[in-house]
Image 1 (cartoon, rainbow, N blue to C red):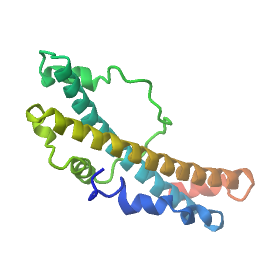
Image 2 (image 1 turned 90 degrees about the vertical axis):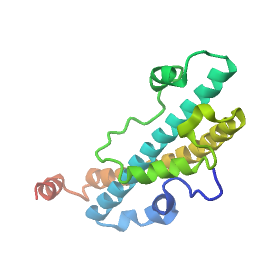
Image 3 (image 1 turned 30 degrees about the horizontal axis):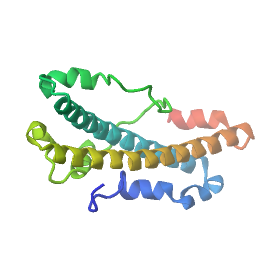
Image 4 (image 1 turned 180 degrees about the horizontal axis):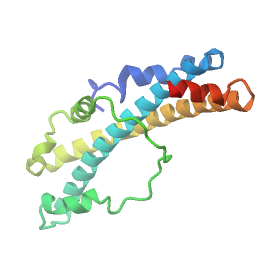
Length: 185
């Protein structure tokens, strides 16, 4: 990752990953815990979207390097359907979460991903030297590792908050009828 690029998700994710974020969840009201869970869910969606952008670029860069090494006569454009079909990738390792929100600021996430490869303009990938492509691939792969780690941390926060909500219902501290009444407003 570039020295100038902040970690994926920036300060909003940093705040979620602070131990203090969850420490007093048991003392917060149901509405506050739900709000915290929605906040974590939004950041997870943002990180997931950013990861898909990053992974798409990384797949294209790696495939271009492979095309060159194998002296594949096809153009990168001809290979895009193959790349986009995720051919050769293993099974998904995600948690299969149902997303109820959309990424908050897609342009910002695209800018973040683009900033990972300064001096490596991927819009003209076929004109880049092998060294530049390898530099870009390394930067993207390194950033993907950090992003995935932060995303897993946010998912753990979401799970902890959902667990706290579930515990309250299970232990009789919260009432389903009140939840339905709140949602009906």
